[in-house]
Length: 170
Figure 1: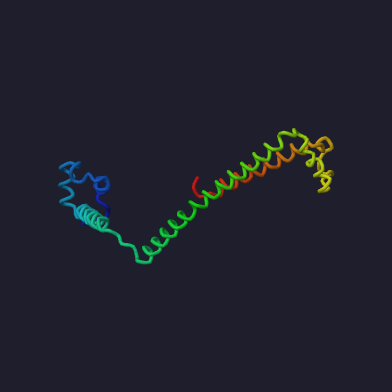
Figure 2: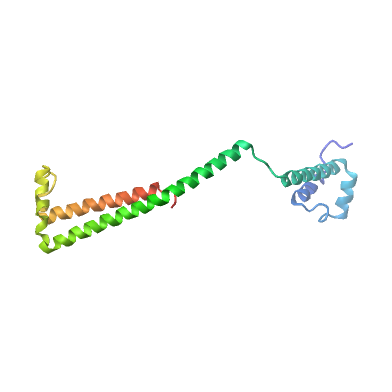
C-alpha cells in the first residue's frame, strides 16, 4: 500500500487532458497504468466524465415556454416598430425637402433686391432688446446676418450630433 501520490500520476493527467491517452504514451506508462490502482482510477474517471459531457452536449437544450413566448413577442414588436418607422422616415425626408425648397424660393425672390432686404435683421436686436449682448461692430445688417447664420449652424450641428448619438443603428 502506497501512502503518497503515484510518481506517474502527473504525466498520466497531462496526457489525459491533452487527449493523447493511450496513443502518445510509452509502453512502460501503459503497463504502469494497468498495474497502478490510482492511475487506473484516474483514467477510468476521466474517460467516464468525457463520455457523459459529450452525451450531454449532444442533446438539444430546450428553453422554457416563457422564454420562447417572450422572444416571439419581442420579435413581433420589433417588426411592428420597423414597419412603422419606414413611413416616418419618408415623412421626415419629405419635410426637409419642402423646408429647403421653401428657403430656396424665399432666397430666390429676395435675391433681386440684393442685401437690402436684410434690413429687418438690423432692427431685430433693438426689437428684442439684445443690443447689450451684441458687440457694436456686429450691429449692422451684415453682422446680424452673420450671427444668424452662425446660430443656425450651431443648431444644425447640435441636432445632427443628438440624432447620431441617439440612433440605434450606427
